[in-house]
Structures are given as structure tokens and as C-alpha cells.
Amino acid sequence: MKWIIACMAENDYERIDGRLTAIEMKLMYMEDFVKQLQEVTVQNGTELARLKKENALMAEKIKEMSDLLEGDIPNRKPPHY
Image 1 (tube, rainbow, N blue to C red):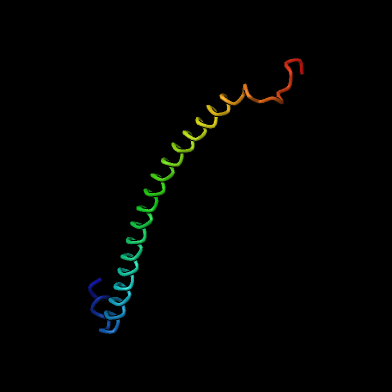
Image 2 (image 1 turned 30 degrees about the vertical axis):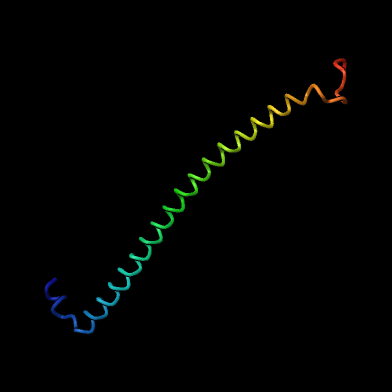
């Protein structure tokens, strides 16, 4: 192994160093992107929970209003239909 390293030219070291730097930069950007995705996912989960709760409340209110108005509907079918 030492022989392989000893045989490498200076430009090989520079090339490898450049590739390693590029990989490190890509990794840094990917880590940042994943962090942003996690934040958006948490925000979306919170918003979804809020909207589900709001939807349930609205459905309950509509049901209550429907129950209140049911007696006032003049075009109801008679019970024998």
C-alpha cells in the first residue's frame, strides 16, 4: 500500500483532493436540503392536524344545523314511502 501511495504523482493528489472537496460540498448541500425538507414536513403535519380538527368541527356544526332545520323542511316524503 505504501508503494502505491509513493508512486502517485503530485497531480494525482490534487485531482483526488479536488474530487474529495466536490463530494464534501455536495454532501453539505444535501444535508441542508434534507434539513429543509424535514422542517417543511413538520410544518405540513402541523397544518394537516389543524385542518382535520377544523374539518371535524365544521362537519359537526353542519350536522347540528341540519338537525335543527329538519323539522322545517316542507317537502319531506311521508313515512309510507
